[in-house]
Length: 182
Image (cartoon, rainbow, N blue to C red):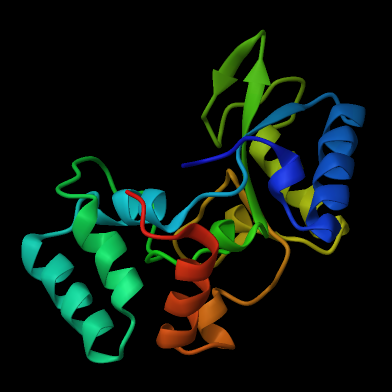
């Protein structure tokens, strides 16, 4: 499950996310949110893309070894996934699962534009999005030193919930919030 609804965000991010879109619009850039809350099963699907069976099995075993059975279940139950790498965040480790992150795309002439180098009227939508997010005290993935994620903005500066919680704690919260569905 992945949501596009800003109502699924925590209140502080919801307010800033709406302001962010308006601030971009004020600069002539239309951005549209396409993912807000993302459950750990969807996160597992995204993480498994481009990962080897050995790497996936290693993470599942690592999760089980620390009692994070729900996170192991998430990774295992979604089955094989194929595609280009889109995230390094394991299920539960992305702020999307906590309602504290959003992904947006740039709209140019009514169509989604994914280029981070194209300019319209001297501006690139993703760069404007990142600049405006930063002005609001948000963390913009496009400004990260590694693995630039131009569509992503999050409430916290911390890379993931793992910075303040154990893997088991994250697993327990994810199970409480999202249950055992695939």
